[in-house]
Length: 276
Ligand SMILES: [Mg+2]
Image (cartoon, rainbow, N blue to C red; front, side):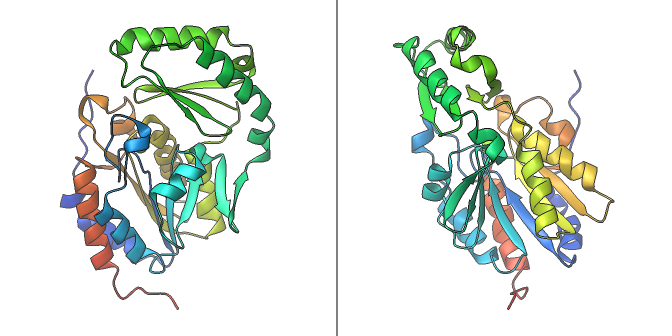
């Protein structure tokens, strides 16, 4: 299979300058694998302090600075304490608004099934080295720490197949993880569309590293030329880069370090754009 080549964003900063000239520009960033290096367990991951600092300085200069993540809202608020930043958690199912978390009603309707599935799957996974991440309306099972990740993934899939609660739920695979979630058409893609419309953006940049970011980058491409201009930036993670990311993105950054370098540049470049 031939993997498409995508140019480095750092070598194409003029394209970013062009987007910054738009009236209403928004920055969308994924968190894990984009501004927080992947760690052994999800709890141990932290946002690079320099990256958080750059984001903080860009809030108020751009119409929107948003974190769009698969994390729970609780995690997102713990990891990123940037006032004025918009947080979208659980892949578009949850949004922080007016000091509380809003779960999309369509997703909330499956809460009981998600709880049931969590208990059933947890019970059949003993000593497998699988970490359970309870995100409220979504549950993620991470097999990164399993001594035999391939076997752990298989046993996890079997446990999910056996769970009665999971029957009406959707099952999604990510980087060394499987999520059980409400079967609703909410994604980072729908979140991106909603924010672009709500904030009246006519330009934007989306950065992400995983399968779920592909949906956002695809949405961004679909909007391009329809009163909106934007680019998708794939953050590469070596062997863990999912299929589809390179096809969906326009430019790449090689690592979290490069993302931080880019945000530092963007923060510098956006000086003087302060909104009253
Ligand atoms: Mg990610």
